[in-house]
Image (cartoon, rainbow, N blue to C red):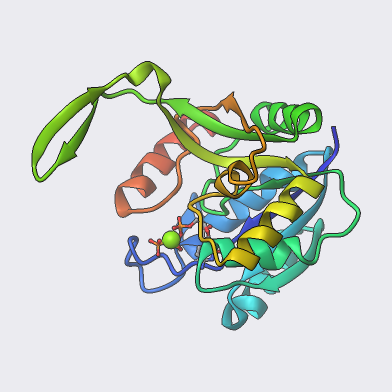
Length: 228
Ligand code: CTP
Ligand code: MG
């Protein structure tokens, strides 16, 4: 199943507190952004990559694409103040596509089998998102006191990629923009249209590099995968 992917990369990495966009930090001497891009560059089913970037980082990112021979990027769009606006800027540029995935540039450890499963389910059902089962006991807390223990068997921790029939994603983005609705992921925009969204079981390795500890975890994953 062929697909295109939108990669929002226009954040500032506040929680990483590195003094720059965290995507420029390196794991094994390679920027996190490039690790993520290489997954899609190497996947033959991926036909195009659509990046959202900060205007002031555009030329640096363009130079990285050349340096690492990333050739599938179709366009770099200016990102917005919120992740959703960055994704929407890319959605507006994509034309005539069947399946489109949205994937955080900060999740470099996604694997091809999960990507392909998501694209397949999006093709048959319209919307599919990656997630893992909650591992810990979950409780609802109010004012420092437990209200209830939530049944964990129905709880999933949601990741990206999130994969969609492109018409479904486009419509969801248009309606969110019209209604000034800000969601926490693309699926939420699709859910509010009443469209079903399916889950694809992903991996605990597909972390979003967010804080300093995640860099240690990232190095460990790479050591395990490629040795050293
Ligand atoms: N992102 C984006 N535009 C924004 C905010 C985030 O394109 N306005 C991107 C980030 O670059 C990242 C992905 O969305 O690839 C997930 O966001 P997150 O992990 O929250 O990254 P940051 O927003 O950069 O980090 P923080 O929230 O700690 O500032
Ligand atoms: Mg953020």
